[in-house]
Image (cartoon, rainbow, N blue to C red; front, side):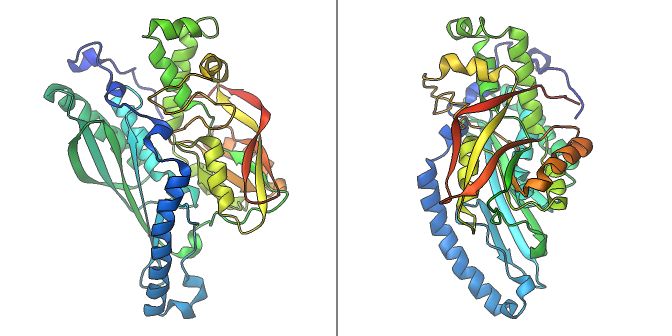
Length: 393
């Protein structure tokens, strides 16, 4: 991804104080229901979906074709999957991201990357179409909306082009917040899906992007808030915070396509993408899907440089915009368009990390292990924090 000039509102005839992120009151996990509530709602859909799948497979005569049976992705999956004629499966997922950065073009790219994340997590490399949705803030003036909307759309389209998928214009509507995302659709043979359910004792867990994006985004806003910035200055310079913010945007906009392609070659036992519930939430989601009685234990946390340190002064302070504290080392700090969390056979994991660095130009890390257990996940009390500086292309 080529570097672009930092977004300057005045270049677009906007007031120099304009900040797109200020249109959003909640970010990260604060935009989502608690995990238990979400799981209950998803179970309602999944129970009905399973009944419909059985009816469809019987109607289409697929029960006599074992290779065509639609794979199960778990009750807490956000992906809809249905059988099609000819032994194919139609897969759809929807994702909407509130504006969390101030560069509209980069926000479009981040939202597109996030929208594709669920597909990459099950090994799908090519999406057929994305129907884009864009909510523009009703609190913005016509001039502000006219300035930012084309940049968001262009960023979304450019990211989709990089992902080799087509974008269809969906609804654009007025909304209290600025939100952007879409619905993906792909039709593929079911055997192309990597089901997230095959982890075994002795496997290890690999992560493909660093953590700390929400910390970097929030702390960047502190540069304009004297009281909060005074608590940061002894720990990190403004240049460190600006660098972390740029790295966060870059990583959030980076597709997981190479990570998904490579995990297929190294016998991955299942994966999920890291999102608003943080690395621990992703681990909990993935471990619930497992067929075997296992636990996931996370020992290492790769974090954007300086973000672990700057989060500490705010570890017990509540931020209304994110709905939680900066509990980065507890694994609950929200991420947007995070990396893939993948379970690998131990002997394959190191080779995967080496290969992903060769093909993607970025590092992946072994962060945990799979043990005998009761389908639970945890981050150890004092995980090893790995300071990461992203090589932005």
